Length: 504
Image 1 (cartoon, helix red, strand yellow):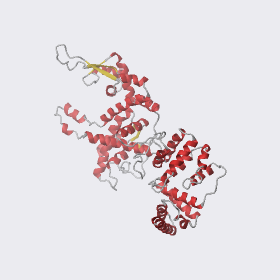
Image 2: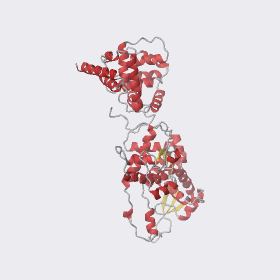
Image 3: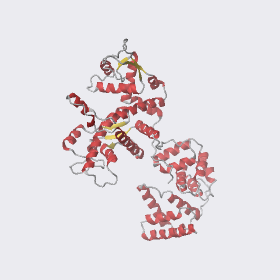
Image 4: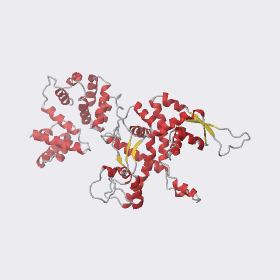
């Protein structure tokens, strides 16, 4: 496998216009923008730009949250986001005329709408997304911050402030949250339904339970439970910015966990004492999370900034056929087709076919995969490309797939292939699938091998003579995969002959 293939499967991104609309409608961002417009007459703020108590009440009323017991907290969060993203700008108040500092209860400055607010309404979708990404980074930092409730209790009870009691490593917390978002991103990319949510216990276990651990210990299960509760807090913080869609852990269940100390199984299902399989309702009580389309966009942007190869459908539209064919074999089938369709749409059928066929040639290790990707991509091309396919009918490497393409379109005048070409195409097709780690693909390959040997009684006697670089490897694979012991033995003998022939 070549070293420059994608390290992550591609994702399908929504358009920038759609993502920008999602960003503007995210509850936290929408409130921040609303408060920034409300600040037109000037809002007194504290030293860090925080909104003071009196204007906070007015701001909460302005957002329609006065009747919500958490309204002031939601308003303060939205205000802070407006400050952090530049939706409001702060003009510091001057010191007293005698050179003394302002009293603690006085405003340290005045907030008014910032330049970034204009971009939300008159800027491009990318301008909106850039502002949102900046706010998202602030929210991520908040999500990774420690729970200070215990310290607040210490102060409330008149005790001494014990900073050592906070079990928090900022780097570890940030890395853990990045890892969790990365796992969600990978699951989204691999899932045929990107909108499918992941059970919270399964997500927590994916970061904690070692892959080689058959039966998790009680300590590991307890760690998974603790991580699950921490993630519950974090996803509650991340949802309002539009990064994730989250169904929180059932509050009644949290009380049960606190009282009984029950853990969760690393397979993603909660530990239960009852009999029978868990229902969807049982699993959902433990929390369900998924990245939103905006979240997929954001996590990918952070990965790209970190130097990770994170492709998206459409990245290859302006690339050459060689780049397209090198990438497609690693794409899930639906995304490979989507990528091919975009690439073809940017070219005429004839030019696309010529470029694909030229890039498909070669005797290198990856050439069979390129030719299989070429055949799959050409299946999407209209008959207008007929001239390009007829031009390679006599080509040993391309003549077989060209005949297949012409036959599928019932075009006339297709010459019969020689037996040599048929066997060469057979070896090439199997060689293209040898590296697949997909269990379903392995089953399909096994069925293909079985069908070939049933149709051709002397297949192995002829196959070992095929002048293809992968002939011996293909025959060895057929010896491993063929369910009939006699045929498998014949395949191994043929592989030995092919290997000896190549060494002569």
